[in-house]
Length: 453
Image (cartoon, rainbow, N blue to C red; front, side, top):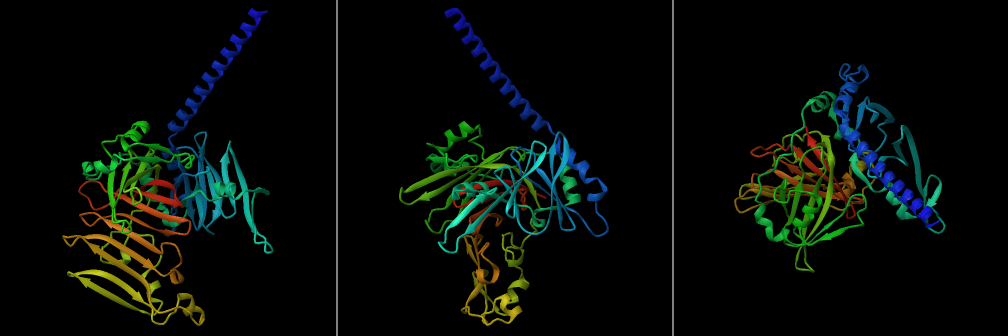
């Protein structure tokens, strides 16, 4: 009897080990299959069909976005303000969503597309839609949250809908189709390192750092120093891609940020060291950087021309001057130190168009302040606009420049937190080849590498 029982236990253990072996092999084959997909060639063939080619003056726009959870980007094509979004399934392009240019849509970290009041995902060869909404009870002022008709907690609702990236699918983040075709044809190159003095910050980088895994940012792990974190993540500690010294007027101590990225096809890491006044030392935080998307290269800017700067402001010179005010300029050491626009008539653009009597106060509605180093080189630029005239997005934006007066970083305000963008320049050039965009959801950061074309 005992021999029979022992035999059964042995058979059970062998079955468990065999199942584990098969699962590991299956996982490996899935990963291998995913990595072996030649998505560039598949999308190239798609863009060569007549429907997506230039007709007359209409040039289709194209963008690459990470909508689902694999390492293969999705392709969005905009033709005549209608979007066609493709994924790849079994080595073939699959059109899983068509939409009009009717509002923002975002690539979501939940592995789907957030669009209006629904989430759209492509799973197991089928398109799946998840509806969500929130309602406010006028009597008790209570907000209720629903997913697919079922009431859920606010945190569950936020996890599904709010933690989406600002990988905004729209024409401003898309390329002409001929540029996209050129990108898909070119061989992938390593991300170049900027000129660095990595030993300058050795003392800062020896302190503790908190690592926030993207799959569960609340499950952070604390490391005693950056070297031990890099060792665990198999990152080359000695060779960061770029190091940034970011102005921080509030603490008087500049923030030290590092980016580690090997290639556009691999995930990287953003490590940020901020001064902690209560502890009297720097404290680090580390966030994963997603594989690359493609973004149009910003136009060449003149640092003294406010209308060519690379920030996130959505206004033009015409928008500002529509308010019927006046420009003010201030010079220091022969250089502009401040530009501002004063709206004397107190009119917003909407007031002018509708004739509504304004109730605003006199003052600046737009300004840029410049800070220079001891060599009279531009070090910092601070931009502010009045939200009553130009909306709340990018109400304030702080920009940092290197010793060659190249814009290397900016950060600004958005309603759910903030945004940042880091520029990566190949050595001895004044044109960035890559940027890293950071969408800060009240402390949870989603980071994306962008190839600038």
